[in-house]
Length: 155
Image (tube, rainbow, N blue to C red):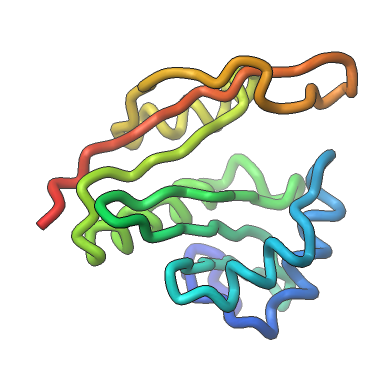
C-alpha cells in the first residue's frame, strides 16, 4: 500500500512495525503485550496507515457491550499535520457504527491540544476527567485525562 490516506486493518504480522512506531514516537510507548493482544483479540480492531512500506499511523478500537472505545491512536511525528489522524478517526467511527455502537468513547491528555481540537471537530464532547491520570511528558508530575464521547445512534 502506498496511498497513506488508505486505512487498512493490521494483522499480527504488523507487531514489529507497531512496536517501532511506538518506540520512536512516544515518551511512554505501549507494551508489546498490549499491542499483541489488540492484534489478536476479536473485540479489537487495529487500523493502520503505511507510506512507502513504513507504518506511519495506527488506531486501536475496542468493542464494548453498548459502546466502542478508542484505545490508542498515533501518527508518526514526521507525518503529522497531513490529515492522517482524521483518516484514522473516520475509520474508527465507521467501524463503531458498523458494530451498531451507541457511543464512541476516548480519553486524551489534557495538554494534547491538537488531538482535542480534532476530536471536537469530529463531534466529540467532554464528559469528565480523570485527575492526575497520566505521568507528565516531562516526567515531573501528573496530567489529567479528558474523557470524551460521541453519540453514534446505535442499533
